[in-house]
Structures are given as structure tokens and as C-alpha cells.
Amino acid sequence: MKEFVSIFEGWLGVDNLHKLDEVNECDWEKFNRLIVLISEKYSIQLADCERKTCTPVSNVKPILQTFAQALEKDSSLFTKLVIPELDCVLTEDWDYTFIVWHKNNGAVEALKPLFVAAGLYNFHDQSSPGSFA
Image 1 (cartoon, rainbow, N blue to C red):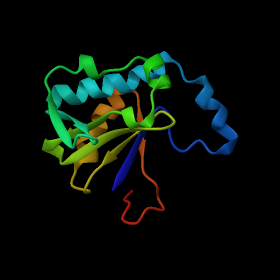
Image 2 (cartoon, rainbow, N blue to C red):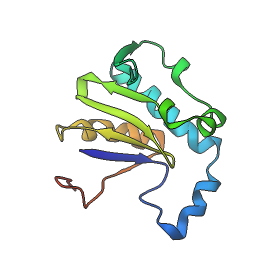
Image 3 (cartoon, rainbow, N blue to C red):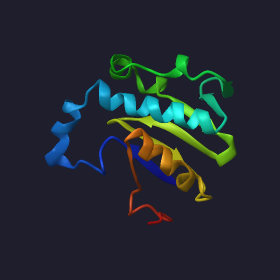
Image 4 (cartoon, rainbow, N blue to C red):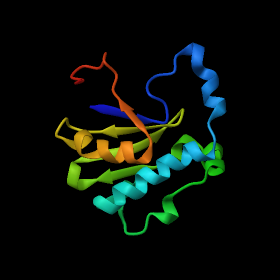
């Protein structure tokens, strides 16, 4: 299952796409804050899909990105973090969104206070099979 984590409260829709151009460094820092908060509570691993490896992360600072770095990178360089304790994966995606890939096993509920503390919103696609409210 997928849970979306964003600086926006939900999908923007065509009429609000201009908001993507209004995103600034303070908005991007919310994702860095989320990664820090997660790392303070759970062990995390950096996934490298090309090499098929997961490397434990003891210090998150080297994996945090500036807004400028985030704007310039290719999708193959998007951050992918495994959170073994919650049996889920947090992946960076387009349009200032991260995705929590989970098994509907309580991971989203465990992470929700961290989303809120970071100033982010979470939502899921109601049309997805098996999505929950």
C-alpha cells in the first residue's frame, strides 16, 4: 500500500499546479526534518536499487539534501529509506512528495506524529485497492 507525504494537503489538481513553482527551501527542509525525526526514533537503511543493497544509516546528515540539490537531481537519485522496525520503505518522488510503502500494519499510524511534527501532510489515493481511511 502507498501513503503519500507532502508539503501539500492533497493532490493539487490542474488548477493549482502553479503552487509547485512557489515551493521554497523552507518547504523542502520539512522533508529533511522528517528524515531526522524518523532516524531519532527508528533505525533506517539507505537503499541502493542499482546495487541491490541497504546500508545502515547512523548519521543522517550526509543523506540530507539542500533544496538546490533536490531540484537538480535525476529520479534515479531519489532517496529511498528502509525502516525495518516498521516493515516499510520511504521513497522520494516527484512534486515534493514522499511515499511510504507499507503493508497496512501500523507503519503509517506510527509515522503520522512525525509527519505532523515536520509540518507535512499525509494522504492516500482513495481509488487504490485496499486503501483505508
